[in-house]
Image (tube, rainbow, N blue to C red; front, side, top):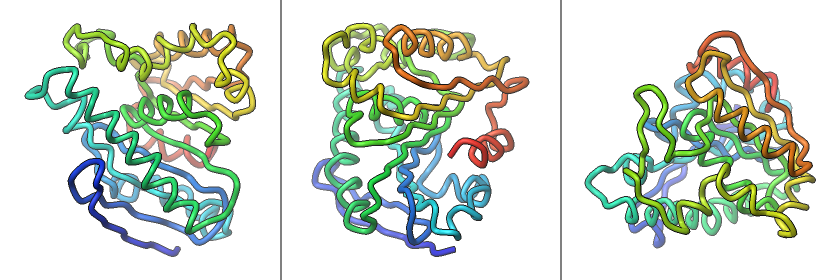
Length: 242
């Protein structure tokens, strides 16, 4: 399998950013890591390996990036507004640095966005905000509202709320998309959600599925046995859904 390491200084994030590219051709897959994961996480967890046959056959090319969660949503030293600003800068980096790199390396017209856990939120937020840029979303074990409190998982914004929070939270802004150009683009996407039936964020996934259904957005929601919030389940999901 072709494996390429890339690193450059991001003027939008004011720091060096790293990523790994696996494969030589095929649909491009932009992969967001989990909360504490780095750009090499999916290689270490075996998720890249679970896709090896498709990658080696030239069906998929994987782009594994940093997620910067510890500098945004999980940086308690920052005011919540600054956490959101850092996330917005990260999105700007993805849109204006990573996606152009992917386009330059591979002219395939299909771009898939994938993530697990917090990476699923980042993937979904990006795709639902910019659906014209993508063909498919594949999100595993996601939490699509970071302001909700479930079990030991608290509000990552400490009760703070503004337009940035609203427009980056899928279950908040989707209801207001009537007549918006994004809605028509969302209806053209292939959207796959997978979650364990004992995952604490199951209800949030059911809510997102209901919202998409109400908007006429085609999607599938797959329920797995147990919590399924772990690498072993994600490897199996990836082989099936990506």
